[in-house]
Length: 189
Image 1: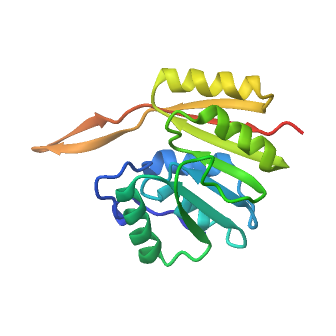
Image 2: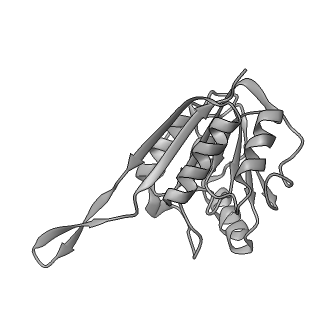
Protein backbone atom coordinates (compact mmCIF):
# COMPACT_ATOMS: atom_id res chain seq x y z
CA UNK A 1 0.00 0.00 0.00
CA UNK A 2 1.30 3.40 -0.90
CA UNK A 3 0.23 7.00 -1.34
CA UNK A 4 0.47 8.68 -4.76
CA UNK A 5 1.49 12.32 -4.95
CA UNK A 6 -0.43 14.84 -7.10
CA UNK A 7 2.55 15.47 -9.34
CA UNK A 8 2.54 11.82 -10.40
CA UNK A 9 -1.02 11.86 -11.77
CA UNK A 10 -1.80 12.81 -15.34
CA UNK A 11 -4.43 15.49 -14.99
CA UNK A 12 -5.15 17.41 -18.19
CA UNK A 13 -8.09 19.78 -17.68
CA UNK A 14 -9.98 17.35 -15.46
CA UNK A 15 -10.77 18.04 -11.78
CA UNK A 16 -8.64 16.10 -9.32
CA UNK A 17 -9.02 15.49 -5.60
CA UNK A 18 -5.79 16.88 -4.15
CA UNK A 19 -3.52 14.59 -2.16
CA UNK A 20 -4.22 15.98 1.32
CA UNK A 21 -7.98 15.67 0.76
CA UNK A 22 -7.51 12.33 -1.02
CA UNK A 23 -5.59 10.91 1.97
CA UNK A 24 -8.37 11.79 4.40
CA UNK A 25 -11.12 10.66 2.00
CA UNK A 26 -9.49 7.27 1.41
CA UNK A 27 -8.90 6.87 5.16
CA UNK A 28 -12.56 7.69 5.88
CA UNK A 29 -13.62 4.96 3.42
CA UNK A 30 -12.09 2.47 5.85
CA UNK A 31 -11.29 0.08 3.00
CA UNK A 32 -10.71 -3.62 3.49
CA UNK A 33 -8.49 -5.72 1.26
CA UNK A 34 -11.59 -7.11 -0.49
CA UNK A 35 -13.74 -3.95 -0.63
CA UNK A 36 -15.84 -3.22 -3.70
CA UNK A 37 -15.70 0.55 -4.18
CA UNK A 38 -17.77 2.71 -6.51
CA UNK A 39 -16.06 6.04 -7.35
CA UNK A 40 -18.83 8.34 -8.62
CA UNK A 41 -17.65 11.33 -10.64
CA UNK A 42 -14.17 9.82 -10.91
CA UNK A 43 -12.61 12.91 -12.59
CA UNK A 44 -8.93 12.04 -13.06
CA UNK A 45 -9.30 8.74 -11.19
CA UNK A 46 -7.08 9.88 -8.31
CA UNK A 47 -9.30 8.65 -5.45
CA UNK A 48 -10.17 5.30 -7.03
CA UNK A 49 -6.62 4.64 -8.18
CA UNK A 50 -5.17 5.43 -4.77
CA UNK A 51 -7.90 3.33 -3.12
CA UNK A 52 -6.99 0.41 -5.40
CA UNK A 53 -3.70 0.19 -3.48
CA UNK A 54 -5.65 -0.62 -0.29
CA UNK A 55 -8.37 -2.96 -1.55
CA UNK A 56 -5.92 -5.16 -3.45
CA UNK A 57 -8.21 -8.21 -3.41
CA UNK A 58 -11.29 -6.12 -4.18
CA UNK A 59 -12.27 -3.88 -7.06
CA UNK A 60 -12.88 -0.23 -7.89
CA UNK A 61 -15.53 0.87 -10.38
CA UNK A 62 -14.89 4.41 -11.61
CA UNK A 63 -18.01 6.09 -12.99
CA UNK A 64 -17.32 9.09 -15.24
CA UNK A 65 -19.36 10.80 -17.94
CA UNK A 66 -16.85 13.44 -19.10
CA UNK A 67 -14.96 12.35 -22.24
CA UNK A 68 -11.76 14.14 -21.15
CA UNK A 69 -12.02 12.50 -17.74
CA UNK A 70 -12.41 9.04 -19.27
CA UNK A 71 -9.24 9.54 -21.30
CA UNK A 72 -7.23 10.88 -18.35
CA UNK A 73 -8.36 7.97 -16.16
CA UNK A 74 -7.30 5.47 -18.85
CA UNK A 75 -3.88 7.12 -19.00
CA UNK A 76 -3.52 7.05 -15.20
CA UNK A 77 -4.64 3.41 -15.00
CA UNK A 78 -1.99 2.53 -17.56
CA UNK A 79 0.69 4.66 -15.88
CA UNK A 80 0.14 3.07 -12.46
CA UNK A 81 -0.55 -0.41 -13.89
CA UNK A 82 -3.82 -0.72 -11.96
CA UNK A 83 -5.52 -4.08 -12.52
CA UNK A 84 -8.41 -4.02 -10.02
CA UNK A 85 -10.20 -0.99 -11.52
CA UNK A 86 -13.00 -0.98 -14.07
CA UNK A 87 -13.81 2.30 -15.80
CA UNK A 88 -17.48 2.84 -16.63
CA UNK A 89 -18.57 5.49 -19.14
CA UNK A 90 -21.83 7.03 -17.97
CA UNK A 91 -23.71 8.82 -15.24
CA UNK A 92 -24.53 7.41 -11.81
CA UNK A 93 -26.59 5.71 -10.74
CA UNK A 94 -27.74 4.39 -14.15
CA UNK A 95 -24.23 3.46 -15.29
CA UNK A 96 -23.26 1.60 -12.12
CA UNK A 97 -22.99 -2.16 -12.77
CA UNK A 98 -25.51 -4.46 -11.11
CA UNK A 99 -23.25 -5.47 -8.20
CA UNK A 100 -23.13 -5.52 -4.39
CA UNK A 101 -20.74 -2.94 -2.93
CA UNK A 102 -19.44 -2.05 0.50
CA UNK A 103 -17.88 1.36 -0.18
CA UNK A 104 -18.75 4.41 -2.28
CA UNK A 105 -16.95 7.69 -2.88
CA UNK A 106 -18.86 10.60 -4.43
CA UNK A 107 -16.67 13.32 -5.89
CA UNK A 108 -19.37 14.63 -8.22
CA UNK A 109 -23.02 13.70 -8.68
CA UNK A 110 -24.31 16.09 -11.37
CA UNK A 111 -27.43 16.75 -9.32
CA UNK A 112 -28.22 13.06 -8.75
CA UNK A 113 -27.02 12.73 -5.15
CA UNK A 114 -30.37 11.64 -3.71
CA UNK A 115 -30.88 8.81 -6.19
CA UNK A 116 -27.21 7.80 -5.94
CA UNK A 117 -27.60 7.41 -2.17
CA UNK A 118 -30.82 5.43 -2.69
CA UNK A 119 -28.95 3.13 -5.13
CA UNK A 120 -26.24 2.67 -2.50
CA UNK A 121 -28.76 1.65 0.16
CA UNK A 122 -30.35 -0.89 -2.18
CA UNK A 123 -27.07 -2.37 -3.46
CA UNK A 124 -24.68 -2.31 -0.54
CA UNK A 125 -23.83 -4.76 2.21
CA UNK A 126 -24.88 -4.08 5.84
CA UNK A 127 -21.44 -2.77 6.89
CA UNK A 128 -21.15 -0.32 4.00
CA UNK A 129 -19.62 3.15 4.18
CA UNK A 130 -19.89 6.21 1.96
CA UNK A 131 -17.71 9.31 1.63
CA UNK A 132 -18.85 12.46 -0.16
CA UNK A 133 -16.58 15.40 -0.99
CA UNK A 134 -18.06 18.82 -1.66
CA UNK A 135 -16.87 22.41 -1.83
CA UNK A 136 -20.14 24.35 -1.60
CA UNK A 137 -22.37 24.94 1.41
CA UNK A 138 -25.39 24.05 -0.72
CA UNK A 139 -23.93 20.64 -1.59
CA UNK A 140 -22.99 20.09 2.06
CA UNK A 141 -26.58 20.85 3.09
CA UNK A 142 -27.98 18.60 0.34
CA UNK A 143 -25.66 15.77 1.41
CA UNK A 144 -26.57 16.07 5.09
CA UNK A 145 -30.31 16.29 4.34
CA UNK A 146 -30.22 13.20 2.11
CA UNK A 147 -28.08 11.15 4.50
CA UNK A 148 -30.40 11.97 7.41
CA UNK A 149 -33.57 11.43 5.34
CA UNK A 150 -32.34 7.99 4.26
CA UNK A 151 -31.33 6.95 7.77
CA UNK A 152 -27.55 6.73 7.45
CA UNK A 153 -25.61 6.30 10.72
CA UNK A 154 -22.43 7.82 12.14
CA UNK A 155 -22.62 10.88 9.87
CA UNK A 156 -19.45 12.95 10.23
CA UNK A 157 -18.30 16.11 8.47
CA UNK A 158 -14.66 17.11 8.31
CA UNK A 159 -13.77 20.52 6.90
CA UNK A 160 -10.23 20.75 5.58
CA UNK A 161 -8.46 23.94 4.59
CA UNK A 162 -5.12 23.39 2.89
CA UNK A 163 -2.53 26.07 2.24
CA UNK A 164 0.74 25.42 0.43
CA UNK A 165 3.82 27.55 0.29
CA UNK A 166 4.74 29.40 -2.88
CA UNK A 167 8.19 30.89 -3.27
CA UNK A 168 8.08 34.68 -3.81
CA UNK A 169 11.63 35.90 -4.13
CA UNK A 170 13.40 34.74 -0.98
CA UNK A 171 10.15 34.31 0.94
CA UNK A 172 7.49 31.65 1.26
CA UNK A 173 3.90 32.81 0.96
CA UNK A 174 1.06 30.49 1.95
CA UNK A 175 -1.50 30.09 -0.82
CA UNK A 176 -4.91 28.75 0.24
CA UNK A 177 -6.87 26.19 -1.74
CA UNK A 178 -10.65 25.77 -1.65
CA UNK A 179 -11.95 24.46 1.67
CA UNK A 180 -13.38 20.95 1.26
CA UNK A 181 -16.09 19.16 3.21
CA UNK A 182 -15.47 15.44 3.61
CA UNK A 183 -18.70 13.75 4.70
CA UNK A 184 -18.67 10.12 5.80
CA UNK A 185 -21.50 7.86 6.93
CA UNK A 186 -22.40 4.22 7.48
CA UNK A 187 -25.38 2.50 5.96
CA UNK A 188 -28.15 1.73 8.40
CA UNK A 189 -28.71 -2.02 8.86
